[in-house]
Amino acid sequence: MTHAIQDVVVRDIDPVATEEITEVLAAAMGDGAVARWLMPDAALRRESNPAYFAIFAEHAVRFGEVYASVDPIDGKLSGVALWFPLTQAIPPPVDYDSRLKEVAGPAFDRISHLDAALEAEHPLVPHHYLAFIAVRPDRQNLGIGSSLLARHHARLDRAALPAYLEANDPDNRELYLRHGYVSRPPVLLPDGPPVWPMWREPLV
Image (tube, rainbow, N blue to C red):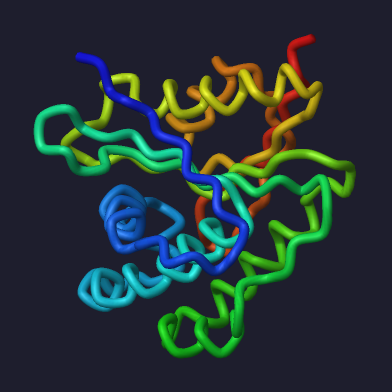
């Protein structure tokens, strides 16, 4: 089955809807190991996840590059990848701290810790950063994630640009290794799961 990959590249405040992007992110990532560490209460997590991921979906539409896979059967988004071209300065999400406090509740301190730990490992050289890649649970294991990665990697290879991401579970880490990433020592969260920074040199 073929899944059409669409590029959405918007760097201004055009009215681009982000609700469906947010839905895919929340459905795919809302119960992962890092999400459970950030907010152990499942009901609270389900309630706050959409607003949390909306912060990043809106930011990516404004300042990043969003790839979306459209399901040929129902026409809905089946997968999304949120990239940020860190070849120039990009501002943080608008009102990030205040919005985070509003949506995170008791998870605010852990999210702040995670943000700081990942920022400390983030490379300073020009690269493209994959902030999130997510596939709807009912469309996983169909190659959609690989297709989303391959589409942007082809562009990076032509431009001789590296890529960076953080793998949040061992299965994802294996996927990224197959796509040319090299794993660095994991970031260890207090009583939480490891998160692996990963770097990909362009194929030139």
